[in-house]
Image (cartoon, rainbow, N blue to C red; front, side, top):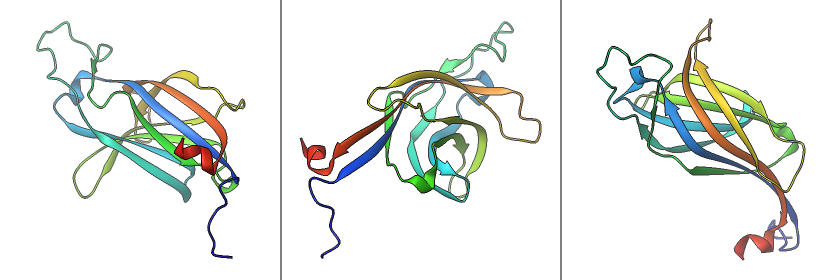
Length: 155
């Protein structure tokens, strides 16, 4: 055969939608981007979202680490073609930098067990480090797994 996938072949698609990203004030004016990885470390695929920039921090003494500013690049979606080698692990990363990127914050979560519907979740990205306890970002996300034929993707 020619190696192509038949129109009637069943595909499993994983959808991750970042609805709202809220960053802590000290990240204000930094150029950041979200990266979503599907699978375990060493055997995953990545989806990079457009850059985010938090608005300028409020220069008020009352502004604390707990208050945050919604960042740009809200309401973006990553789609993955599911494969058993990727397990059901999603890893979200907030990264900064130019050509050499450094993780700033991260979190991991499992796919919902039910297919065919979106599950809305609030997740926190913790500072990337040995004592990752400080929250740097909060995300309002929707995650779902869908089964569909290749032919239906064009509809």
